[in-house]
Picture 1 (cartoon, helix red, strand yellow):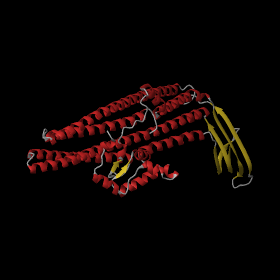
Picture 2: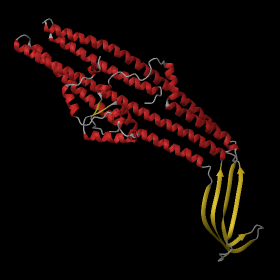
Picture 3: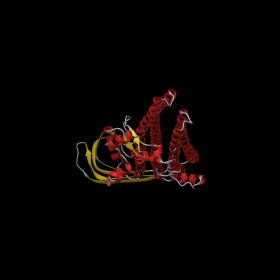
Picture 4: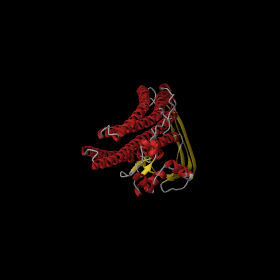
Length: 468
């Protein structure tokens, strides 16, 4: 079966396609663009959105769809924003090791009774003023260190989850593109069938006028013409709905009249057929971003467990150093101003909740680590199921293509024989029409098989963790 048999172009469609001023094909468009533009998917999105608003329909191919899906979807941007937030938290965790610096001036005044070191109480009226910087350190080194390491792992997990979101959106856009492509190809098949049936209607009409055919045969053909027109309208609706779904994924205007590039409707194998399921499962475990994210989350839980167990044994550090000027004296005395310095350092351990002998904190951390292991196991099992399902779909679709090829060849031969029998007056009109219906169904079935195969190939590629 040739590709043009899957999605042939009628004459009026070809003329319209030639007259259409805006046709986007990303592979050619990107290849001839400047370097900075090839790496700016957002710019491509802006251009495509402008074109969609300016002319309809717009033809897009698979590379265009995949690029737009990965650049212009708010779900992807939300995941990237979450990654940016977690990454900033990770950097902030390490910055807590820096001492704090304050710079200021102060004034203090005391009037009335005060008590000296010996215990005597006496009346005083005094004041003092200070100016200068102070360096302060209040560290829990163990707690801060493990917290920073855990935050780094959470940032890695967020990065992998953002990549997972991107791949999911690209996969959704790819599937919807193939749905649109299948609807357009099926529509083209019915339009071709309608054209042939209308030609046949003219032949039967001439035979009826000549008295060599029955009017009932002409009415039967007219009924078939009406049935095919109805099918065309139904497939046009299906195509428009598929275009709307694709526009939603690409975040384009809902009324964008997207049309696929017909040349894409051929079976495309993306992975080596010789790869066994065991190899695919191994690749999925290594390359799927979900597994990488689960590993990072588990590592963060391990660090939190160490934080609960080891960090309380590392002493807290408090230190301060200040220098500047100090002056004052009795009330209304602003003299005696001179430089001053003070320093303090101390070590300590916290006992109780959040410190030494906090068993509950360790139990909680251990339970969280165990939960992350169980979640990783669930993710691995789900990924394994996805790989097996995608491989089974791909193999089934491949077999269906071969079966449909046989059906199309048989239907074509049946149409040929029916037409010969009709010409020799050995057959009837109904036999020819039924033969053409069988051929149309076989061709449409092959379109669905090719579409299912291509979608399954992309699903399998995503399932094993290959870049989309």
